[in-house]
Image (cartoon, rainbow, N blue to C red; front, side, top):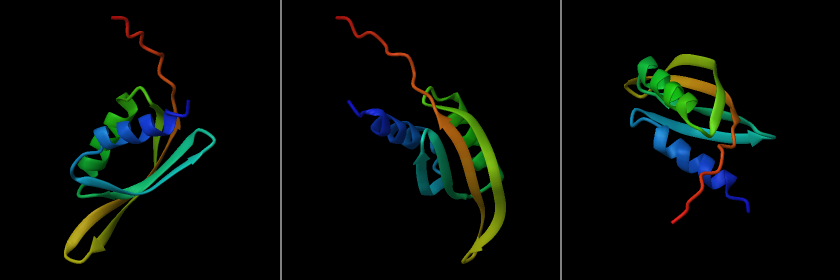
Length: 94
């Protein structure tokens, strides 16, 4: 069935660090566009590394990162693109 989107979002939730949050998730024919904020460049880098290591995402690229103020916080606003990967099915014998 159509379990792909569920797996994509579940995996995204798993790899998203506590110091980052998403404001947008768009899937356009297998190309994913993610926008959000991180508390630091290191947090955004960690998110990208973990996303790239995931079996569901590949070709993770940072398009934009810019410093922005939200009240008293200085945040890193980012936009990332990547592609959907369908991992091989694992046989669940037993």
